[in-house]
Image (tube, rainbow, N blue to C red):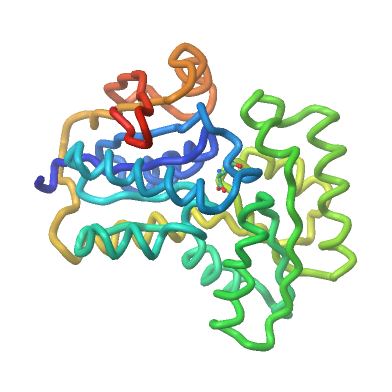
Length: 275
Ligand code: DGL
């Protein structure tokens, strides 16, 4: 493993691509291995222990494949498995979404009334309220589970009536709580940001991927592992679902012009992921 080794990134599905976009923007010279566990999407409705098992197995596969760092581009995985995976692979950097997202929300929120939009599992884990309260005990946090969002994003329906109706419904409790800032606590949700902003132009939205990527950069810099690649980076995308469908989505959802790109099948076998 050296500075040219790839960074591992994973999610249950296409949401992780919002994190890939953030990495491409801040660290365009880095190569990536991205895993979309689309055989199991959505994670948000599954028992937290099961999600933790998937997250640990995928992280294991990524480090075994020679990754120099892993980004859990999945809030629910970060909520339930970040500490375990960090301890297992220390001192290699493992970046989650909850802590960077919370720090950024605290900076953005004027009145310390923060809304969290997330999957059912992330809401149940209570990870965001707990971490936000550690940062500022008087913060008011209102969470809302948004189960319709992930299937809409996976189906590419991010700007239709169904997305608009779901967004209106999910925003209601947050507006009632008079939040000034909303954390997009699932990596799928930034694809719905235009719709959310059109309904609530005065609310500040936080995408944890931005600060998570800055943290990734700092941690790689600290151990002298930032890439100095001057050629096109190589991105390897693996899915446990349909390779054809992932290829189609990639072309629509991220910029692929300056990449060498490979899309492949990943397989689960008795709890072990093979890339
Ligand atoms: N995108 C993931 C997250 O950030 C998981 C969504 C899901 O599969 O339910 O939580």
